[in-house]
Image (cartoon, rainbow over the protein chains, first blue to last red):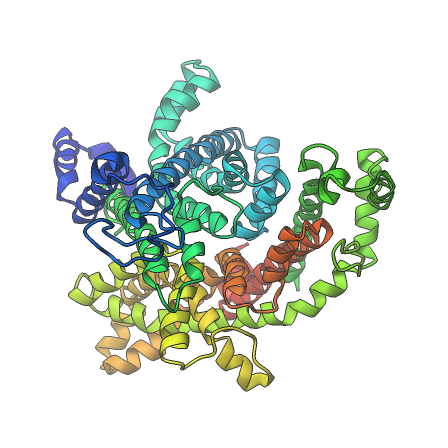
Length: 289
Length: 311
């Protein structure tokens, strides 16, 4: 009930106030700041290190931090700091691309299911039920196994498994939104279904999908790192945080930092994205925090 | 009966779908599946044998039927690496995985309930913010990494728990599986804490709490008797919804701690290119999730009578 009254009485000043507030959401600001720093570090990697991440120096293996090697070297004498930066480049790039496909596919299928209902809804949602019957990692690992390790398999596997959450979220939002007056008005105005969905419904329901995408990227980064840790993801010698952890594992008792540092990079990146997701949720769903 | 019956009926299409996905895995293999699986040095005879065994030269529908028919007879295929039935291998490995799942669920509740209570009783206070932000860290932690750190700190350095292994006897399992279960629980708890906090807050705002307060029910008693009892139901559901995450987490963690479960069997089989076992484990994981979801629904309906009438 309160939602309808809010819709009717929403004055221009309310919208203006909300716009002016985005930088006052502490979680959003903290997350954005952190993410900008991380992105700057991985994109500007050549500026921050002079070492090639792939160059081995067998005379300087497992070295501690020094003025030459800020974070020491790994078992092949490669510079940990530059592998960390270049590895982040790879992992973040794959994760940011990987989140797009399920977002698009899930949004399209969820909109179709929610808007048309009936058979479309029945079939799409049954498929959703079947996909969620598998644990996330099990299906991803099984798919990457059959498709063969590598980047394109990661995209396919994450899309095949990840779209279901977006479909559920968008479908739910569409089911509510399609009963509102502006949709009825558009329908009685004779607009095509495609136009109603694309121009009228989607802009109103997409925020939930975007908020979810933030936590989904975190999950995708974890999936990519996990696959690489298992040897199924990013293939050596390309640096990546998962392979770094897997390599460091053998030296856990003597050089625990080789395992810890890349993991911390994952955690900090995840924290930044989670904070952004939280902040966006606070900002876009007022009254629900 | 009607509620459980309806839930069972809904499972039928899901179960069929699960078998279809697992069946199609083989056709996702690029090229000739038999040749890819057996490797480039396989003799034509071996390839032909596998073709015949898997029915690859039949029409697709007939292949699927063969697959389902074997499943219904409890036949998950023959392991290419161990040369024994995949079903037997999986069955022998199942107890360790089930232990891990139950242990993790228990630990998650033990971690989440007190923390959610701390947060909900001081909404927007310092401890609420701490309980809300710290779990965000947990959300971004790779499960295998948490496992390695716990292994390093509590097993290799402080020697409180064994580094790897399953232990023997119930006491041994409880001790040996503590670290692996804690590892999965660290990833699962943030989600549970958040929804538990939200449901506790909504319970705290309910009329019957106001009534209990005005009757003079003391704080602790009010919380345990009135709030916790009503807030625990959503926590069970949240655990149920995230069972996929929980079970998927065990897959990774079993490898870190060298537990003889089906997750480590799956990863080993991937490296052995033992397709039938990978396929079998994927199926069993799907079945596990479906069964646990059913159990959660039934538990939910038992705990909260409203559910039975709602649907």
